[in-house]
Length: 292
View (cartoon, rainbow, N blue to C red):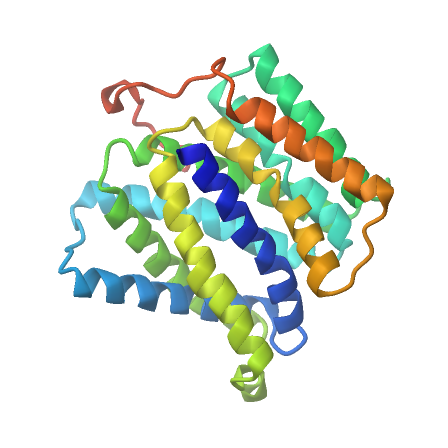
């Protein structure tokens, strides 16, 4: 069941928050992202080589992979840079606004969609309690939410008309090259790359486990509409808060637990309802790109 598979991947995505938080005490953000995608790319290419699986190299597959990677890269960079100027709670709340952007992009504006999204977003506000004031970091993070939503829309369309394994692998390769090119902004010191226990654990969680979660997302988006995938991922901040409470001892009060419950309620309501459907056949998917 794709819904259950995606809910399980939110545990992995949630675990990336405490893992990354610990790793960033040692290494700068863009350098960490480069190592994360480099490790994921190596793992995936190794699996493909062992399975003797060849990648599609036609111009169409490469073009749509570049378009999807562009949105993914923009989302990660805006989110990471935005965290320099805003609070973590504001970043978490604003990022999950992709729940709103996805149905807007797709013009799937049914009542059921907005009710389930609204419940999840109100629950998220109770959980993270963002500040009312806005700053540059908030605006950058809002841009990242829009970019992540565009990436989900791309995956809904492209996984139905192209080889999803090739699309997945090319995105990892392009992300690794793009992150390599942006590391010069930070001028990372050699000491940042010392293979400490914290850095290794962070890279295993984000580079191996999260890459597997991304593969599950690619598979699920062949079967589910993008707005449903976005809503399922709205549970990610709640999972992250629970893991931080359990493993790091961070406080989660009654209001936080209430907000978490509301998020899960909205997610479950939106995930198992039949009001919104995805395109039934690949041929029905329009093949224009959001990226130009």
